[in-house]
Image 1 (tube, helix red, strand yellow):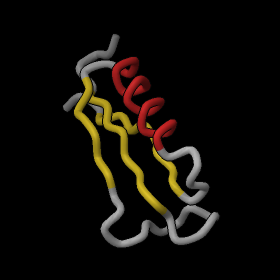
Image 2 (cartoon, rainbow, N blue to C red):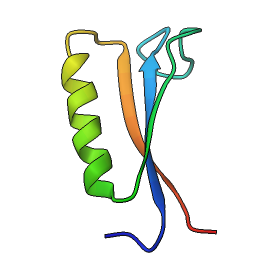
Image 3 (tube, rainbow, N blue to C red):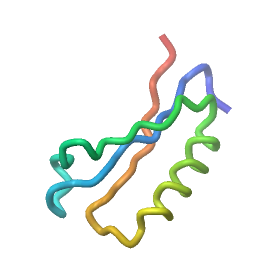
Length: 66
C-alpha cells in the first residue's frame, strides 16, 4: 500500500547495452498504478514479453504524493 504515490512502468529499447539512450519511437509508459504491487505485475508482464530482446529494459518509477 502507498501513501498516495503513483507508480509507473517506463522503458523501451535502448541503442546500446549501457542503457543510456532510448531508440527513438520505442519509449513506453504504462500506468499510473495506485500500488507498487500493481506496477510490479505490469513490469513482470512487459519484461517477460521482451526478454528475448537484450536491449529492452523497463523500470518502476514512483511519483511522490504532492
